[in-house]
Amino acid sequence: MLALILALAAAATPVPPGEQPVDPYAAADANAGATPVAGQRLWHAFHEQPGVDRIVDSLVSRAIVDPRIAEIFKGQDIVRLRRTLKEQFCYLLGGGCRYSGREMAASHHNLGIQTKDFNALVDDLQQAMSRERVSPFAQNRLLAKLAPMKRSVVER
Amino acid sequence: MRAGGKLLLTGGISTVEGSGGGGLASWALIAGNETVDGIGGTVHATYVPLADYSLTSEGVAIGIRDRLELSYAHQRFDTQKVGAALGLGRGFSFQQDIIGAKLRLAGDAVIDQDSLLPQIAIGVQYHIADRDAVIHAIGGAHAKGTDFYLAATKVLLAQSLVLGGTVRLTKANQFGLLGFGGDAHNHYSAQFEGSAGLLVTRRLLLGGEYRTKPDNLRFAREDRALDLFAAYAVTRNLTATAAYVDLGDIATIRHQRGALLSLQANF
Ligand code: HEM
Image 1 (tube, helix red, strand yellow):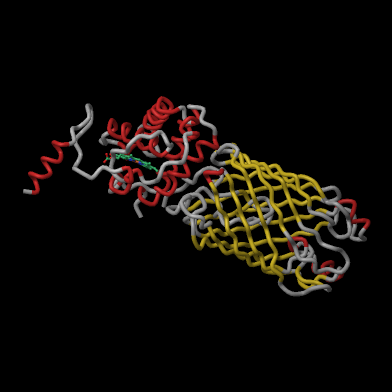
Image 2 (tube, chains in turn brown, blue):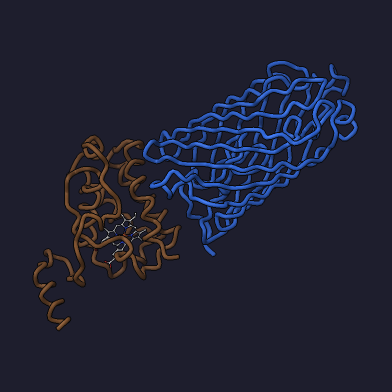
């Protein structure tokens, strides 16, 4: 019976092209791990969706070859990661997207992520944002939203 | 145990007393590039040329699991020409060794962006000054002394600000170079250290610090110390700091202003 329900739920949420199916979960904006900033100024500072797309693509491309953390991304669904990260950043920056991904603790469960890995990813993100010429002050506002998620992402 | 991995500048820079902080004020941050999973440390050399004196400080600090900091610094305060005027001899120097320990009690200055709780640490510094005879001659009570402090540091990422406040229980005269306690006051007093900085880029912190000091000696009034600094993370392993400092009057010689130049290696 349970298997049938799961199969039905999985069938109800079509798998986007290029992605692997995932176990069913309840999608909600709250899964993004923080509330959006008020107003649209930060969204503009990130050059809106095209800017966020470039930042996430550059972040993911850096992370998966970054010798400090590349190992953690091996065999993971990078297509899905790019899509959900773009949604998450858009949501947090006030771009008005819905976040359809899983919550932070569940997404990073059993990946063995340590503080050092978290900081390495932040470092890659800072480089990606700088390449997009987002001002350091605007960068720090996004980082302020992401920083507390360390408690859900890092295993300890 | 894993080495390295801390975010840029989040180990602070070394104070002239060897602890992680600004240039003058001790902060709640733990020195070194390590995270909760490892060990790190710093080595620093600082030069403070003032109008009539100069101060140098060299030291090391070890950070253990971003929790405990152990530090050592050696200071040399050169009286230059003033030494002769004060009857000590030209180029007479006061030196001291400072052994410090700091324990992070609560909070993470960078991660806790969803609360106002700062990173909080307690610290102790044991100072051993070398000029017993002169210290007693000018009214100082002891050549050795222990400072105790409670520091709170907060990074407000959304505002790109770094704020800090420290309360220090101390008897030190001129950071301890002129001993501890004196003929005017010979008891511990609570002194304040405040700092504020703006993260202009992820490598550059511009800010200022203010530090009150006891006034224990009759022969000379002791002033507060302040600075305006620029700390730059040249690489992950090297931080350069340049500051304008004003240490006020020192041993009757007025207006001791100058620079603070510091290089710190972080690992
Ligand atoms: C605040 C920091 C972080 C945020 C906002 C974040 C965000 C996300 C998101 C949105 C997902 C996809 C969720 C889903 O599939 O529904 C994800 C998955 C993943 N993240 Fe993170 N992440 C963070 C930190 C890290 C770190 C530090 C690492 C490793 C160094 C990491 C590695 C991964 C991996 C490997 C996956 C794929 C897991 C899977 O598909 O099962 N993440 N992350």
